[in-house]
View 1 (cartoon, rainbow, N blue to C red):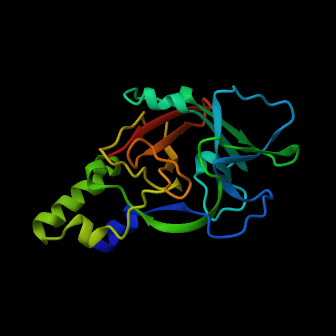
View 2 (view 1 turned 30 degrees about the vertical axis):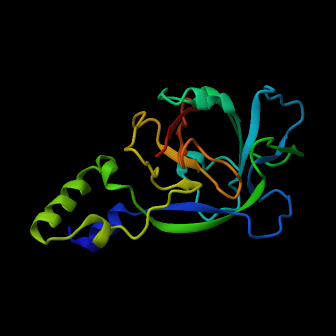
View 3 (view 1 turned 180 degrees about the vertical axis):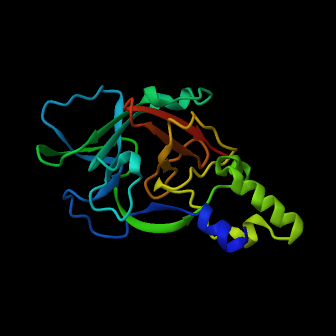
Length: 227
């Protein structure tokens, strides 16, 4: 494989989200940090869980196949999670609800008490790549990169990587900071929520939460790392 072929095999599609910068409509279709806008009648959330994210999927330019049957995801978080960061799976501290239909949802507009609410603007990317420390996630492509580094004096970050996106992201690769973890092939990575200066949301020290989803079991695995 040459560099062009490696890029074609390595790059993944994703959607990244920019915080604020436009006037929100608060209609179905907007994604938010610090606000859960929509829910179903009669749904209950424990009082210690804070609304942190609304992700509308139905109008995005890309959605991972594991989430393709859903149109909206809402996320609440128990901030006690920050007292349990040494645990590998943090999913008990999150309430993640996936909706297959928008019909029947009502506007609930539950704003976080700890995060400043902002709408999120999605942008499609086609060239997401992992950090080299996580290159074991790319299988045989890693061997091809190592061969080119030895034979043709290329460098991964200079000649192959076009960008790494450590931000709110749907799809692509998890943008690990300290080297990655994996709950196994049955739990593929689907999205991440990252520290957000504008929303006053800091995950320990500029970290991220990474969400992995087992579609068959309808089960989540959540990991966190930070500087």
